[in-house]
Length: 158
Picture: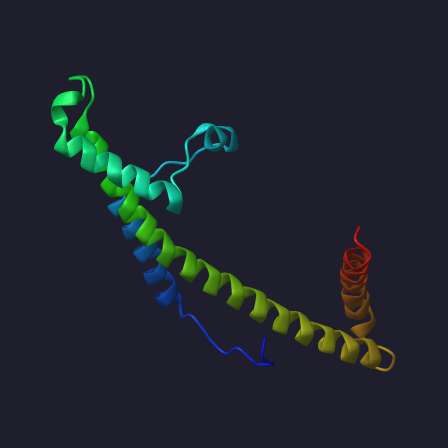
């Protein structure tokens, strides 16, 4: 990553509008579900390689309706296929946005942590001569020790 300072703000109105837009997205897709890990494992997965198979099956079903049993709901099959392809397209955009939000959060969080470490250094130094800062330095020190311990553990593969 380039050494850059990310400067951005979201007003309370912006936050509310973003949340409202997300609610609209959810309202437009009332059929969305949540699966457990076990349920996910049990389902067939339609990836890129399977898409051609499903597309060919839809074409075969539409062209040869007479070979399918009356109990097979071809319209629902086609609707499921169309929804799957539409959701796949939307998911690409959603994943790109998610990745950007996640990367930005990581970068600004890192910047905030670096700033906090600078503040901690100044507080630690000033606490030696400035009344009332010793307790602040101790609070920051406790968290700094926990952060340092966690980073050391990661560095050694713990």
